[in-house]
Image 1 (cartoon, rainbow, N blue to C red):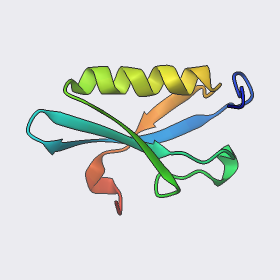
Image 2: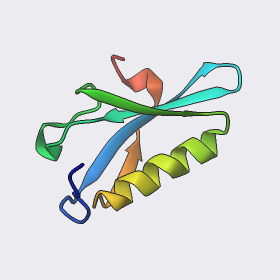
Image 3: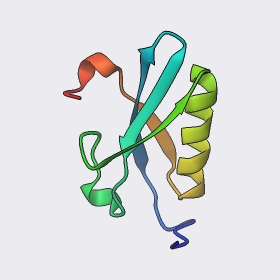
Image 4: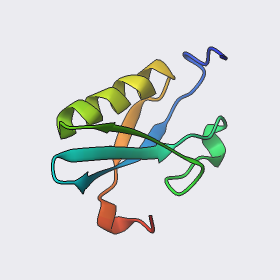
Length: 80
């Protein structure tokens, strides 16, 4: 595993969807190169039963990778 802590800056774009009643999935790009990462790029995700817990997990992961913040895009504004 490569330690990328502190090597990025900018915004990680993510989407939070309820995939089943009470089950939430955050989708975000899993690209190693932030400049090539878009919300429709090579996807990664995190699943949980609490939407705020899922969002917190993604935001902490992004901060740990050096992103400044997470921009949450409404699902209806995406092609996914």
